[in-house]
Image 1 (spheres, rainbow, N blue to C red):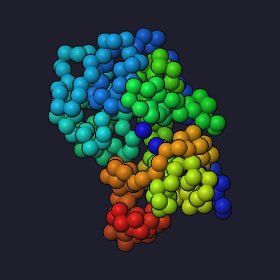
Image 2: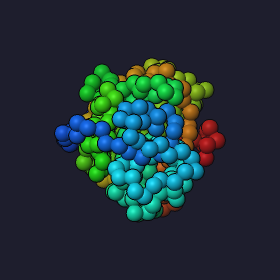
Image 3: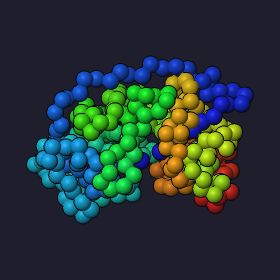
Length: 291
């Protein structure tokens, strides 16, 4: 549940224009009961924020058809296919709410879930049963967690009840924040892995120039692929978030859902005889024998 640096020659702020973020909306004051799929740290934390009326569904169990309300999916990305198999198809589009990190858009499209409810969870639960810590930073003291979709305000109300922040965004604003978090996790984890799996804080302090270069590269590739404009000062926000989770270890994980998306852009471009949009990213993945 994912650092930037002062850019040497050309900052991200100068490459990407400002685009207004959609404001938050009023959220319900009452916590709505939910089905929670996954009994790990996030699932249990969400259950603890409820009123005792939630239904926890564990691995191998089916999601009931007659339980009204949202279905919070708090499993690993690789378990998402089995979650769908255990959920009545009539509830897929309207009621599933995905809390996963990474690039889920290709998977959503393959399942006919292009408008799925999503949550970017910028909070950390260090151990099962412990209260979550909000990922507020010095550049975003209002918090970074965001939700999109039919159940977004219900998610925000639950998180607020648990003392956590949550913005409700429209699809474009949410997509930009999702990509920004993806850029963070792909860049800081890869740079850290190159240096023996040092902590996020060490990456942010000691390997800033590498991190700067990679963030710039991935941001440019994502903006071009999706035809969007990022908010300026991305580097400041990513640095601040890195400082907020400085103790986290680094490793390149869930490749298909994270760095794999950027590598697919590289493969597509080179396959068409075009320059690699992410040459550093490709080179470092190969150095580590990840590809």
